[in-house]
Image 1: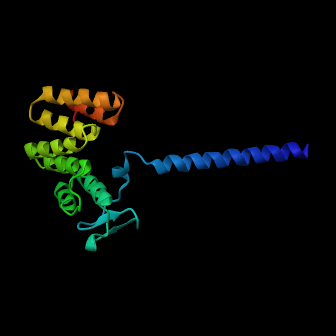
Image 2: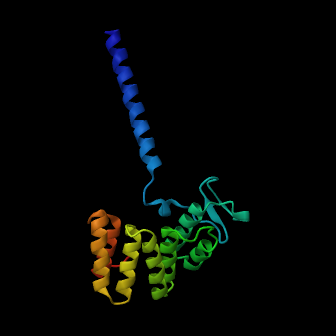
Image 3: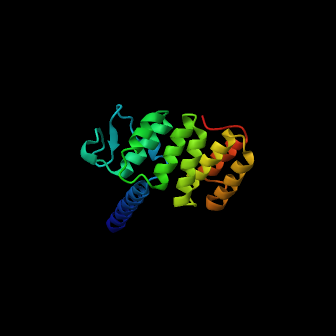
Length: 180
């Protein structure tokens, strides 16, 4: 009887260990909500994922990846000019994300044609980048070109289906319910 209890206890411990392992592995993969998790920093500072703190970028100690992610966070929180300023500090400005986020911030500042040109640079780097297709489609809706927006929606459908966030968001914009 005692052996059965020990075996049951070991089974529970093993199960709990597996749950913790798989939970940690899932969290390590990350998700598309990283921009929402990024903390707000005072103006002139950038969130550094290594130190997990806001820092002034002295002598380019913060990675381009962190700068790009923080620029996106700034743009998504309405701090468009600050986002552009951070993007200006990148060592490698020629990435699909940098061009896309530059396009997003520029479009939100009311410079839609300029934003479209940045989106096109992002697409030239990676034609299968769904997020830039979404934002380009939204820009086309601003320009009164639903035909071009629908073409971007069809491309997104081919990239990630109708269930992905980019498809849902652009579809809502085409249907007259753009992002807030």
